[in-house]
Image (tube, rainbow, N blue to C red):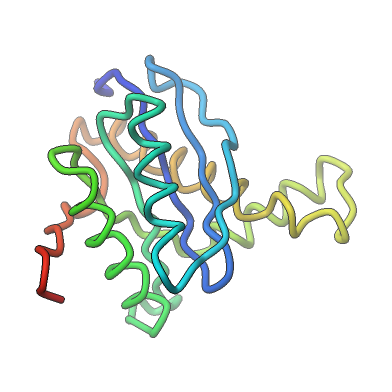
Length: 159
């Protein structure tokens, strides 16, 4: 059985962060926003504001792994981003969920819906966040356990 309550999901990229949310019954995942990555952390502050504004009880962050399951610079970046966000929104838990092929799936779904490639950039990150959230909800439905791994927040002054 899936826990009820709003969840937000984030697809963390080098330039943008796609955001999706689900309804309180955890049935429908929808695109919410696209944040611009900011080296000063404005994207993280915006993400924390979205969590508060939507009353999310849990946050899902996509963890980009290689097809073989290995780590990359993007994997480390997503982990760091998730840990920083977790510190900003505690006690709301943050979980990392494998997001292999989420962007590929989002591109395919956008194409199948009739969108043109040119218009993808503005929504593909949100669509990828929807895919990540749907995968997390499906995993929870099939296992009766939250998807992914719990994130340990970065404490001030520590990386």
